[in-house]
Image (cartoon, rainbow, N blue to C red; front, side, top):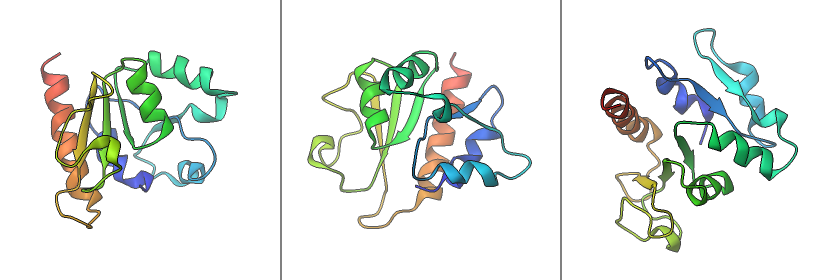
Length: 135
């Protein structure tokens, strides 16, 4: 998922976006628009325990299906995982929760085979606004 799809979250009041990305894709942080701030934590990590420590200090995690999503879920952090309409077997086909991690919520693409990140991130943004309002 291209980083630019997270930009709408950066404009929300009381939201700070952090990247835990390492390796492939990290170069996208070098080309951020002037009005977008994303803090790059991934470059400071030496190992997965550093990643876990960073996750513990976040209010919540929003990610695609990665090892970081699983780590965040295993740590009991509120985690939203963004999935294709037909994800891997572990996410089942039509559930919006995870049987593996109590605090994980699943967001899926609406149309089979279509990766409409803009539509999904609009749903995510609306839900983040609800989270902020209900705090």
